[in-house]
Length: 466
Ligand SMILES: Nc1ncnc2c1ncn2[C@@H]1O[C@H](COP(=O)(O)OP(=O)(O)OP(=O)(O)O)[C@@H](O)[C@H]1O
Ligand SMILES: [Zn+2]
Image (cartoon, rainbow, N blue to C red; front, side, top):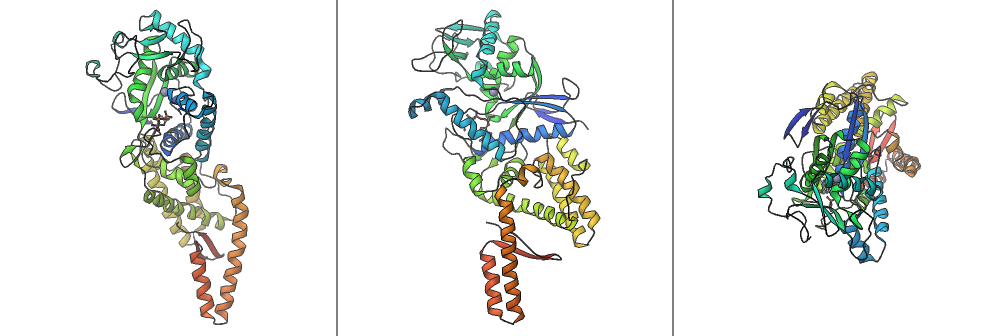
């Protein structure tokens, strides 16, 4: 039972062996809080939430750090446009991100450090890098000297000579156009902090190296983020941290994008679908199913059709769960272990699609057991299904989703009695051979979006597809 993970750095799947037995440390590049999250951002959070849950299932003690970049050019730009303090933009969007993560059932990280709370650590890192000859000050900014670090670009496997585009354009004082800014000299009206090299503000790359060092030490297990971060962000993080003396991350994991018409969903491109809008149209648990169940290294091309498919696939699972709970007449606890085929799929670079196939198979077996009136077997299958869904964060009976909407419980009861009332009327019409009324009632029920099924315990209703 070795977990295997695709390591971007090695370009292959490697057996995972932790730095410290029984423990896993993960650093995930989190939100730049310049705007509310789109579903691409939350996909990244979700993929790593599932990774973390899987490690926990496998008995590891997980330390999961997901940072917040609360100072950045775009935040400052927005503050100017909206005539608001820069930090009010950051706080507002950080809350929006947290609402999004919570809505989709992402467990809170162990630590969620904000960049601006770690200026001291960043100054310390720059001081060390300047002392070691890997960084220099120019005009109040501090740059990393890429030629001083021969291993630079080892993650993205590029050649320094081929690096055509300087990562930071238009900044003067660089010794080499490919050197990147760790610290940016202040400009009038911009937020700034005191350093030995004058007032200024941090560059994005430095923030992550400094925060990873502070919370996870000089070496840790896994560093993650979206594929877009491989270069320059992660490459620059590595250069800073390693040149400073850290061993840094041992495995690099990158989630693929959510795209729209083949292009990365992105705030700056304006092709974003906000999480806050999506949760008005789709149940959050369905969104989680949609965004969390494709393999983390496969692109998700946004489509309403695929969302509908996710909705009906999840409805099949949920319908089974409900039927067995009704039959059992009481709670059915998750099994202590997931089926071996599920575990095997998850161990293999987090093979959620294959693992999900095991869930659907078990649901099918459970449904056959129900059809055969085999209560014991149906209940056993539900226990397995719950254990598997728990790992994926998709167990509809989990506290998180059961309280999805507290009012929905009340509403469920109200709809229940209304449906019974209407069906009684229909029965009465049939009894007096008033077929026209009976048919009209049936048609109206259908139009209302309810699906009525007969069950040994009387009629059951559920919401039909949209
Ligand atoms: N479309 C996407 N699909 C998957 N992951 C994404 C997508 N967009 C951003 N991410 C990931 O979400 C995390 C937070 O991203 P961040 O706030 O830095 O946004 P960003 O990459 O600047 O996004 P945008 O391009 O929308 O401005 C990062 O790990 C990033 O790689
Ligand atoms: Zn980062």
